[in-house]
Length: 209
Image (cartoon, rainbow, N blue to C red; front, side):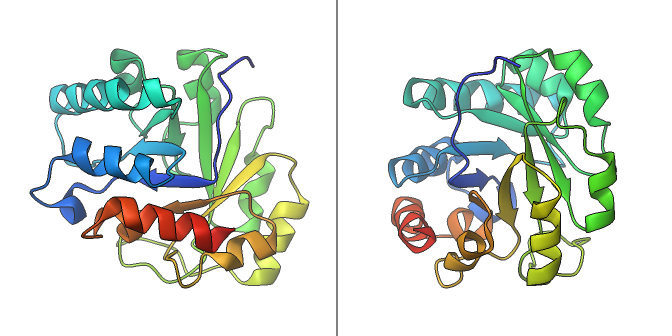
C-alpha cells in the first residue's frame, strides 16, 4: 500500500450539529492551525451532492497543509471528491470491499468497539483502527459502552496496526489514551462544540503529549 504518509496524533471527526451555523471549513481550518493532523467528514444526513461539494472544499484547505481527509462510510463520496480514504464501522461496507473500490493508495480505518471484532481485521487491507469508546460519549446515540483499560490493552496486543482512541475524549482526559498505548486521539465535540476550535485543538495536543 503506497498511500501518502499520515499522522493520527489528533484526528478530528466533524459533526454538523455541534458546529452549528458556523462554516465547517472555517472550523476545520482553525482546528488544523491548532494541531489537528487528520480530518474525517462525518455527516449522516447530508445528500450526496452536498457532501461531495463539502469534501472538495475541505480538500482544498487540507491538502496544502498535508492533512488527509477521510469520509465516514461513504465510499462513493470519497471517490467522487478525491478524498484520501474512508473510515468504516462494523455495520458499514466491509473493509475488503472498500479497498477494492478505492485502490491501494487509500487510507482505510475501521472502528473496533470490542476485542472479538479483531478477528475480522485484515492488516493487509486496513491501515488503522479507531478503538473505543474510551469514555462515555453523547455524540453518538448508539455508542457502545466504554472499554476498560484491560480491554484496550488486549485489543492493542492483538494488532500491529496504528491506532487512535475515540469516544468522550477532551483535554482533561486526553493523557489516558497515550498511557494505554494508543497512537492518537479522535475527537468530535471537544473541537466541534468549542467556541475556539484552534485553542481547543492546541489544548488537546498538549494534553495528549
